[in-house]
Image (tube, rainbow, N blue to C red):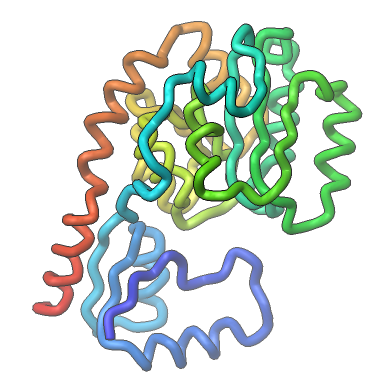
Length: 256
């Protein structure tokens, strides 16, 4: 039994986690960890069974990319604006509150840039609505806070100039692999295995978990016209995340 491990330690800790994890680890024969941080976590539960690192392959099940114009038309968004995207279920550790505080920076919230928030709330949305109200972001934030069907994912990624993942903690993220599939640069925070996937200053920016740092990265991306260079780097980097590489990882761990 070979296990592909997204994370071994839950994002929201609960009583009994360690007991159940130890039972689980004893029940399998080998592990493929999707980030170095997860591989390190695994070693605290087991020091002897075969383990290797292999990043999550591309999420290529969302179809081919569309043009920006096609995606904006599908979402009924105005093409005179630039768009950032926060994508995925909204939970406290994902850091949407930090991003909203960053976006309140007047240099960003300037009438030309909008933030798309696409995904379901998995908790009380009051903190986010209060921030939007406090910083008067109603016209600058596009709330698509609902379940996004697979066939609609392409529209959100292809409408955006850049994907922002302001996570407070993480192991890795499937959102990065969707972004690579659609060849979109990213701004991510320096947590868990996420910086292993995004090369700072190359395929995106890696910042500390601070609204000020995220705001500076967004500003740099647009003011220095980084899109073309970053997209070129993303196209090259995505070659590392093939499903063939994951298949080879399974073969390797069997023979360890």
